[in-house]
Structures are given as C-alpha cells and as structure tokens.
Length: 310
Image (cartoon, rainbow, N blue to C red; front, side):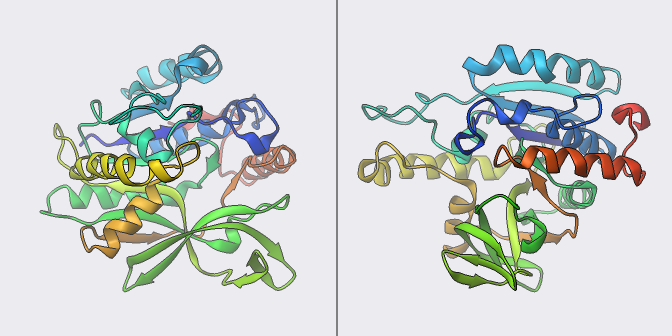
C-alpha cells in the first residue's frame, strides 16, 4: 500500500539568524535533519516523499538535498515529488504589504493535487525519532480498510521537546482514552528548574504535545478526506481572519484541527512516542543537534553511512 511522507520545508527561520535552517548540515557526512526523517520513513514503509518548498529556494534545495534524495529513493522504489507554497495561492486578493506565506495549513494545500494516498505531514527542521514513523505507518495501514477512520498524531512528551537556548511554541494536547480532545498552541515555553513554564505560568512537563506530525488516512488512488476540510477551512480563514490581521495571520494545522475537534467534525488518535525530539530553532541549537546525531550513531541507532541499511 502506498503511503506518503509530506515534508514542509518552505520556511526560512527568522529566529535562526538568517539562512535556510532546513539545509544546515548536522550529520557526520553533512546530512541534514531531513535526511533522518526520510531514512526513518522509508525504513517504516513509506514509499512516496513530497517536498513542500518555495520557488525562490528551489535551486538551493535541489542542490543540497533534492537531487541526492531522488537518487537514493529511485534505487529503493520510492517516488519523490515537489509542491510549491506560494503567497499568492489564496482564495482572494493578497493584502498589500503581505510578504510571508500563510502557514502550515496552506503548505499542505500546496500538495493537494499530488497526494492520492494516506499521508503523514511533518516539519523539515524537526527530528522525530524512529518510533513515531513506525506507529503512524502501522496505524494508517490498519485505517485504510475502515470507514471514517480517525486521523492520528504523534504524541510527544513536552519535556522531551524543549530547547536549551530559548522559548519554543508547542501544541499542548488534552487526551482522553487515547483520543485528542483539544490542542492549544502555546508559545514561549522554556525549561525551568522544576519543569517548564510559558510566560511565567507553570506547564505540565509530562503533557502530550503536538510537534506537527499528523497522519491522515485514506484509500490509495484517492484524495484523503482531510484535504477537503483543510481547503474549506482556508476559505473561511481568508474571509474571516485575514481582514483583522492581514500581514501576520497564519493558517496553522494545529489550530485548524483543534477547531474541527471542538466542532466534533474530526477524531484524532494520539500515538504516544517517548523519543526525544530535537531541532534547530536557534543558531545555538546546531552544535547540540550535531552531537545528538553523533551519539545516536555511536549507540547503533543509525549507521555512519545513513542509508546503507535500507
């Protein structure tokens, strides 16, 4: 059965201090974080990779990773596709002065015409660990034969997802009987001596959080049902939210999914993972991330020649 991994790689991280943070080398042989996600997805059984990028970074992206990944995937029967997030691809007129794209929800919609199978979407600059890919692939495989099967998300533990170098934004989740009941986007979460806090308010360090790794069931050859809901939501967002904040409003997956949950229009199974997340949010994170990959190689989690075990 075909399953796609959709990688959102269109953003340039302003907090990172300039440059395309998704393309920063962190591995022993200049692998980037995305390499490890692609490796783990293929190992779990995903057989299609969709890169969501912007046209203005296409040349750098293809030179840095795209052409290399295409060769690796071709040898293993894995399809590679590209989709382009575009500021102007909206159901209306772009507000004067708007320069940034419209967020992760719009990013996924950029690929709506090439996704015809169950899929998992994630951030390009996050390391998720192997467990989540295995669990999500297995879940989507089981869900393929079910009518109205719930979507799914990788449920990370907050304390495993914090940065040593500053505040982070996380979707803090409420979970009941393994199902997501609400997700609240919470900014500026930092480590504290006794756990974690957001703007001085204590946060449960053992809470589930969304790291923007979502899975959407469907049938091979058909557009997953969630994409229709996402497109309808974008039209509503553009008509009702953008006029009040034309330069900065963003259409974000956790907010859209949270709204559908509150309206009881969607169900989301939470697949618990205890792997430690890490990513390059701040420039100072890079050294720690590179050391983390060296440690994983030393522990035998990955080979020095990353793709040689596939």
